[in-house]
Image (cartoon, rainbow, N blue to C red; front, side):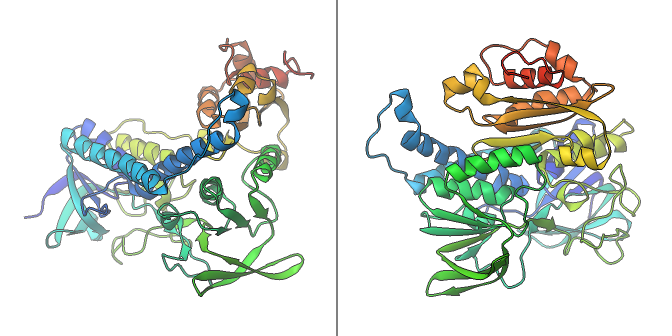
Length: 474
């Protein structure tokens, strides 16, 4: 006999599993459905982020960065290392160990919170009934007082370039390469392309990134994008802007790629081709025709500002709906939805969601770019400060990059902060907190920051908004 639940959640990624735990904390009866399995056939909750996205890519980025530092940076510290090599098999084993540990940790959290978990596929029917196809038994239908759709996203394929899983690969394939390709082609110089391209460049590949747009990192503030491009050029990442790929075919174990730029049509041959042009909502097969849930023309689940869908008591969160495809956005959406269901003031401020690109140097930002502020006619002031002027950055040997802060010209409220530099992913948190509480650049300028630290760059950028930075000529 099918059970009835307070909340049924389809999708066990950062949005779904966090929503499940928060619902359980609020004494709801919860069913969480997720179909992902590991190589061992065991459940692997955590979604794309934990299994084949954020977490494993950062493991490889850190491993390859250690190798890069040994090969290129340690000598300056007086450390001489000879005959260094990378055991890629061990690197992949470590990466998978991190993933499995986190998978196991989630299963323990489900058990501790009395969350019922089914490893299988869920499909929403009419009247909040969910058809579940478990991986180990027959289908069953459950009913929820509320249903949260959190199925995530899948990679986008482009015409003329079909994934084959061996030579033409997506991000999953790029995480599993057993050796560094002599030549790696990457379609798309966005977050995934830059991060995974950086990994395999450090491990010995010649990496060529073909980016269709004429602007590098168009979503990033122009000054930060320009500073980033300089560093990537030094690392010998070959980034070709305005390069529109028209086709790719495998021949004699190689991938022949044709693309067009302002100079005409060209062809390149690679050992492997990574396609990283973005992701789309994983809505295929998720909804029955009579589910009552509307999709947008892009295949996303249509929701309002509180994540309600067009069907009563059915909610949508994460990559499946509007907004940035970020794990932390999905998690906080899940919490906000569950708290709203519980009658609390569930809330998520889309204007203070941080973005991060985990290259070296890292890129992080919160709020609009300077170009966007100009387009909106906002009157603002700007303060910048380079990491090269910080004692900590120089001592670490990681002084590339800068902090850029923009504040309202009249109220001094911080509008945006953009960072390229060491540990930008961690530094942006202070700025998010300041903006969430309507802080001003003066607030950050008056806060004592420890010396010597990288966070002093934020302090000095805040001072620079008022043209009174101490360690920089204003």
